[in-house]
Length: 273
Image 1: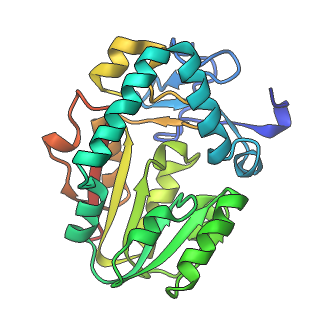
Image 2: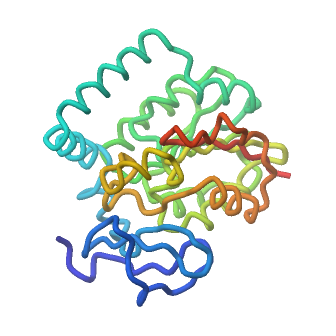
Image 3: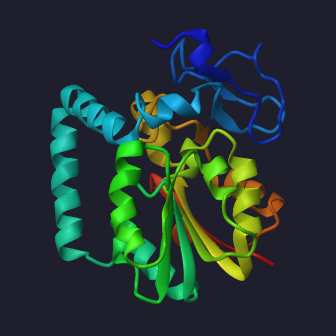
């Protein structure tokens, strides 16, 4: 466990209400309590690691392996089936939804991947795009830099808010936050910065776990969307839509198929006015 100086006590990241005296949900634990805001209903991790810990101790490449091992130990049959289905989808259903959305909504120019990891996605972008990334893990940022540098872009090794502040306004034709916004301590501020750095008419693609999914209701604390202390925000379709609109975005795509209650994830495409 981390000491008190290494965690941040959060207000509700959606409405800023202090829910410290409110009883936690049945999810999370005594050290990492998950609260549902009494004011707006947003679900979030109340205590979160400081950014420095996210850069090393809780870096994605470390926690993802630990989480994979934990799930395999606790539910070996389910994880075996899940891995087989994943292999099947990759082999026979090769079309990536993210790739499709990028091709449909992004115009040529500078593209930013927030939480770009080792640059795998950036490496697949069409040549009309100049790839940029923000990555808090030092090791992964170093790997991604080799990919972007060759195509005129670059990687910022920093937390998302500090990293995106380095870019000028109206700079990007597209921004990607795929499996990232659930990790961000200040999601509203990040959406505001994404709006600032997008060029007029530019689009932002977001993918997050769906807290309103049937699977979460059935599996409870065993739901795959719970990852402590990595996932700090738990969005429903309504809370995601509200936060994005409050940042100034128009909604380009958020149809029924993008937020199916039977899916653990949901997608939304936003446009700067």
